[in-house]
Image 1 (tube, rainbow, N blue to C red):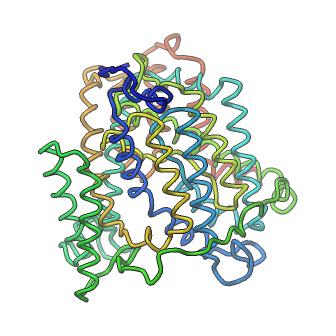
Image 2: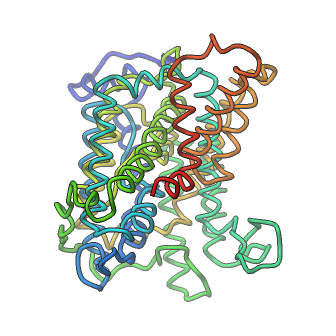
Length: 479
């Protein structure tokens, strides 16, 4: 492992989570857990918005009926995220939080559920999670991870750093997508009109400058302080009544702090119904697409988190790799079984690592906060993304620093690394960046006559990614 400052354990919790051994403290872990939760809390609001309005093939919405069941989906989202994140902390002792996967949930809502019932769609998610679990237990998933060159793993971390920084800027409205109808070839721009405007962007800028200032002054709790202070500013701005357009959550103090949860989506899945309603080939292709995205997203995420926390072994692998992958696989199936889509590891965990988290105790704290949010949903919902995402920009910078670990004079690794890094933010997908890097790495080795130097699994993975990139024409050909 990297340079950790070991100290004598002071308590049972310290010994169990190896807190002192990893150069951390209970205070750091708790702060890190809070920061990760606040950075991820948007999923409690966003997942229902993505899943809740999409009708299935029968015209039914998730949870039943034709009226969106947003509170029901939010409760299930928090429950699974909380339980799986606690499991990650206790079983794998890793500062990694899990929740419904963005991108995966949209794919389930708009591509899968439209061709079958919601129960059938969630059944496919369960199958995907179980297949990944088998791949982990047989050692295949970990073997693939070990087959990836160390510098390509570094590139994955750097690419994710740029990706989450872009997520921060976009979610804050600092960087804005230009409408398709606009007469321009520029895909994104500064603000909605080419200039910054609106109070939400000001809140983001305040939070970003505050967290940078606190960070360079080495203030403990810098990220957490920034999120809380920015949220309070947002509440004041909202109360004043100035013109604003918050991207997701309106930061007004709620009428009630507690709410009674409804877990109506839990257990609403049909394991094999999709094979009858959509056909065997279509169902299998859906499972394959979900599996490949989930499979490599987690690999990239856990590597990036480990690199930022200084936990990676000399070969670039995190401690307890198989345990991490097992929990992640169980979470994928659990998300489907609870009717809230596949759960996966979140790169936003890097914000907690930036606050000092180094062990699974931080994950336990994050998980407990998710469980509390089931009842405190009105309170959690007041944190606007503009107040939380400055943490992602700062952590993006911290992860970008690893780029010096890549040998840019070695074209066999430099070009795949470059494509891995740039395509993650440019395509808004971790999986696409990893896939492009893997395919290019194999291609260059073949072109330079170094086939013997390729690990056999790299051939397998590259071929799978080729299929992944061309899944649409393959689907049309087979169906």
